[in-house]
Image (cartoon, rainbow, N blue to C red; front, side, top):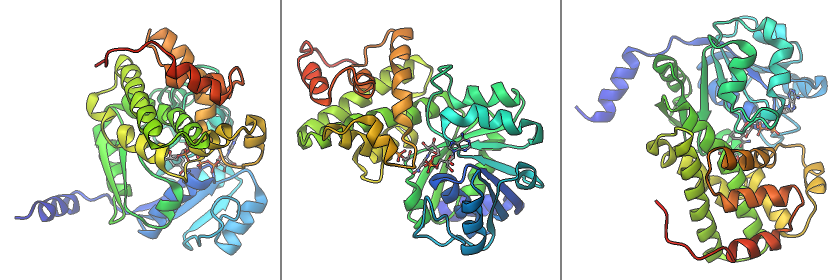
Length: 352
Ligand SMILES: NC(=O)c1ccc[n+]([C@@H]2O[C@H](COP(=O)([O-])OP(=O)(O)OC[C@H]3O[C@@H](n4cnc5c(N)ncnc54)[C@H](O)[C@@H]3O)[C@@H](O)[C@H]2O)c1
Ligand SMILES: O=P(O)(O)OC[C@H](O)CO
């Protein structure tokens, strides 16, 4: 028997019963994209997005378009939106959490009384909370309780590519292997492959730090330093992420997998990356407040960069590239000064 037929028959034998409803927290580009991915396959009878903006709700419900974040794409008819958490959560069997990390705690605290304790939360948010230094796998349980089922989705996945139905590979990380497999079956499609892992820390720290490295990659692009410099920078950044992630308990397979190397390559080299774009504009001399004010979309690496400095200190790891991003983002040094300082660090032996 061909392996593909074997695995297909196995999946079909224990396939997920069709999900009647999925709620999406956060009606931005990725929450929309992942909800649409389910709605298109009719894997979820109804996808309801919980938004704050009643006007955007109206556009989604009447024009079938997320006119603010994905205006060029039509939404399937089984995607709707509401500003009512009670309405959004009613009957939902999974929740996709796509609210930016820095706003997650307040958001969840505002609706936690309405969230059933057995509702699986599938977090797609990538970053580290500045106020606590916590990953999403710490923030969500700290608000909803440690028994709330949670899965953390990460990997090389631009929202627009998902909306276009282009092949995408991601990782579903959970300590609950059966839950990770359920989420794998929920999102798996001819357009989306979903690996599973129990290495939640590894998936989360890689997904968070790659955003910081992408800002550095953008700076190299913005300064027009060329492909040699870009390759050297990304390689150094990969080492720094490996050193820190390993110290934090990440598995090597995760670091070299989709949520690590895969997402690093996509975000550092992919022009769709918001984090990379922030770096490009910093490299061209724009001020960070002007850059952030000009976009309605989040670049999680800007906030996460500040936390990297504390993590480097806590785990006693030298992270010259990742910490330089924090200094540029804070305005302590310019992009040019960051490059000068890194290039003039002592010449060293390659570290494992
Ligand atoms: N866009 C992508 O390609 C992509 C891919 C993978 C993962 N992600 C991650 O998904 C998360 C969401 O990113 P996005 O791209 O959808 O962001 P976005 O900027 O497109 O949208 C953010 C959404 O969060 C909402 N929001 C902001 N502050 C809020 C608050 N205080 N309370 C409630 N809602 C609030 C906004 O209204 C908006 O709907 C991020 O952590 C991002 O790193 C994004
Ligand atoms: O646009 P970015 O930089 O937030 O990256 C989006 C996704 O995380 C890519 O995997």
